[in-house]
Length: 216
Image (cartoon, rainbow, N blue to C red; front, side):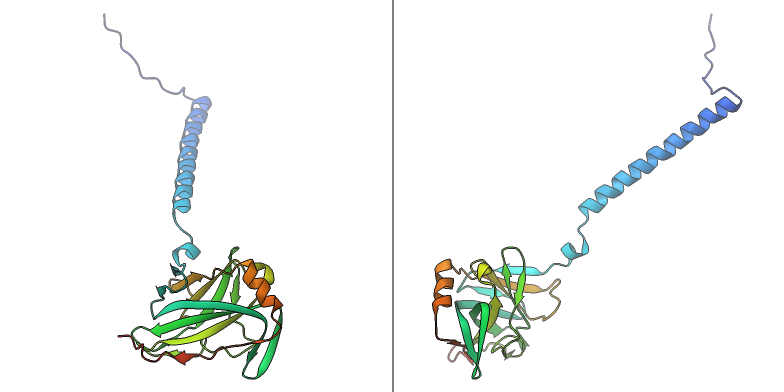
């Protein structure tokens, strides 16, 4: 004998309708949970605006040429002092003056070093000082193929002087998605101590064209 197998159905009446509604709500809830989970994964895998638009930092060492897109730069030397002289005026500091000598040349068209800052190990930035008229940064026009050397002057706390890198770019304010040249300065505690012990002020060097080194 064959026995008919009847499908199971929720009982009719209020109890049946309640069970059916509960199942529907559970299904919708599961879908919502899954959607939230997927959304969280997508968000975590998608970089934020700051990450997407961060500068293109190109690093090098002292004496190496670093490409900053509109110009090339070499950090030649670094020195420091408690007092500096610029255009006949003496400036002192409660920290330390850091003077970075730079060799720069425009690549294809006139440009300038519009942005210059020192970055410490904690990511803090110390911009080129505005207490003097800078010889090279923020104003000196670089001509294509003609190298210029000069100093960029910064004022920093003594405690960060041994952990600094210089950052240079042509855009003065917003470096997002722009090339930035970065070079560690390799300053040690002995150098900082000698700068602080110096009694004579240091004269800031002017920016000058490097003759006989026209680059093509």
